Structure formats: C-alpha cells, structure tokens
Image (spheres, rainbow, N blue to C red):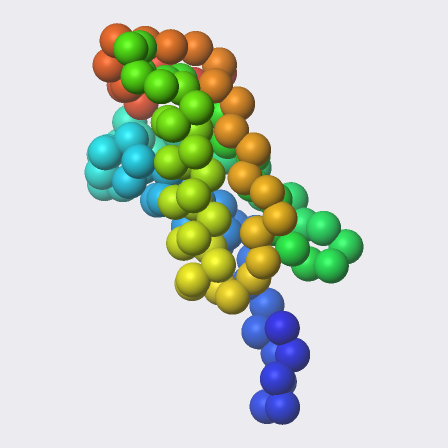
Length: 111
C-alpha cells in the first residue's frame, strides 16, 4: 500500500496470524494454548497479482452441527478481521473440512 509518506507492506506471516486467531475464535480456543498453536500449520496464505488475499484453511468440524454454517462462520470471521486490520481485500477464504469429530481438540486437527 503506497501513501504520500511512503508504503506499508504486510507480510504473509502477519496475515496468517490474523487468520489463525480468527479461526481460533470460531473454535472457541485460546491462542495461548500450546496445542492450539499446532493448528496454525493448517492455514495457508496466497496473494493474487492484484495483492488481494486468499486464505486456505483445513479443519475438522463438530459432529451434529451444520458443516456449511461452521465453514461459513470461519470464512466470515477470517475475512472480516483481515480486511478490518489490514485494509487488504480478501478474495476468498477456502475451508476444507477433512473430518467430523465429537469435540474439536487441537491435536486432532493435525495432518
């Protein structure tokens, strides 16, 4: 992002951290939990040629809940937080649900 005074560059690692914390909010897990930190590897950041952001998330979902609603909640939270904090446009948040479980535990989401 260029401004009269200079430019601001936001790294992919910063975007990944925002997406990670937004993801944890939906899962209702704390970022301080050492097991939750393992989930960060399930998030990938891509940039389009226009410098828009694409976020890819792999997750398990809670059994008995609407998988579509669960995925939408993740998409919305990540997209809103990245756009609000960085003013970058989020082109897509792709959620891949790889399994369903009784209770979401950080260790179970590793792949």
